[in-house]
Image 1: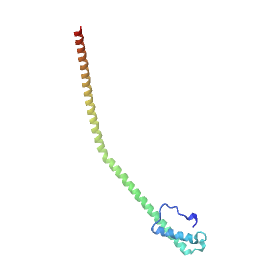
Image 2: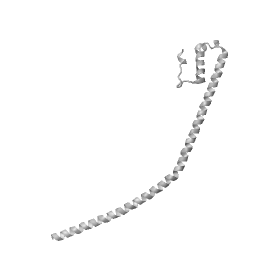
Image 3: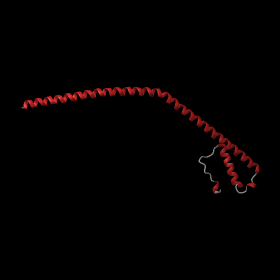
Image 4: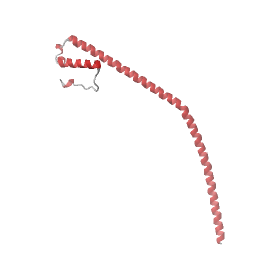
Length: 139
């Protein structure tokens, strides 16, 4: 068989398409490629009609799959939007709670910072007092 007749399809045909493909291969191998006028015209016409029907069927199936895929995409988009809408109030409540918690932590930090400052001053005063007493004893 001629090298130009080799198939480069990525998938094997099945069912009716496989039958039509075999019939086309048979036609070409039986002389239809080099001497088509010697072929039986009725059989060639039937082959072309069947081939056209198979192509139309394949296109309809492909379009049907495309429509199904688009419908699935629409369903997924709707589900994602619904999830986003249902999560917004929950996320808003959680954000408000975290904001209140952060404010409480900041307030606690400020109280602790003031207490630390007070203790640091008292410690410095105590050291100064002890240092003065120690100097007074040394004189």
